[in-house]
Length: 81
Image 1 (spheres, rainbow, N blue to C red):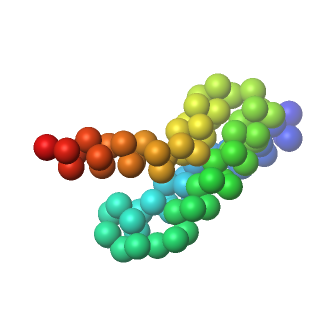
Image 2 (tube, rainbow, N blue to C red):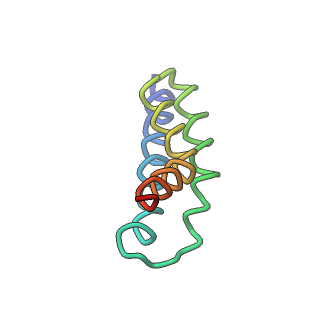
């Protein structure tokens, strides 16, 4: 039981780290290459969430893994007007 709690904590940590990695680029308009770590932390979070069998964490980590493509699509849509 304790191991499942650790996986859940690690999965939430991956989500929070992915969100924090986007803050300089989106919030402060500072070009930071650290956002590319979402391609490492996102899949790690998916693995930890799958080991914990938590669907919500799996979905959130998948969203963080593909966040670059989501932000690019939103940016192209907004700039098209």
